[in-house]
Length: 150
Image (tube, rainbow, N blue to C red; front, top):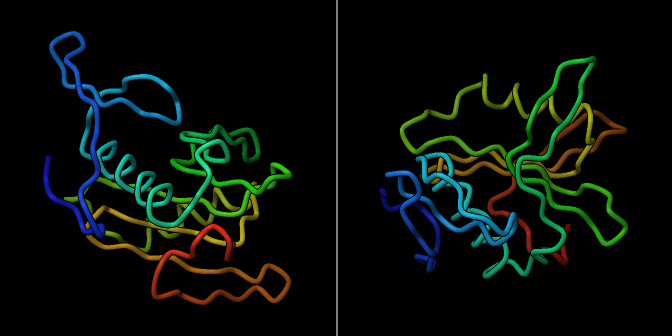
């Protein structure tokens, strides 16, 4: 898989499952097919856990959401210790450009969760912004916040 724009490379466990490469997801506790998007997701999660102190037990991968009868899956959702969602991330494959459509997609998902932080990444380019829901404003951040800052 392609090198990504994270501070370091993380150790992953791989195996072949039905002639396809799978990567062990420690959050879901199972092997999942290694696609370019999954590669980005796994690197983002390890960055959050190993470098930003996010508790693995408070992270959900592919969280199902229902918005007006339509089902969605949020790539990564981080909760506080009271199980309230704090941050949601949308991961794309490295070759997928981050466009307005991607921001619109995560904004739709956030109508359900109302997290304070949204992250959009393709592993090469990362965007993180904080939302003030009461004022309807957002600010782009220079970096993902540490868990203690959420």
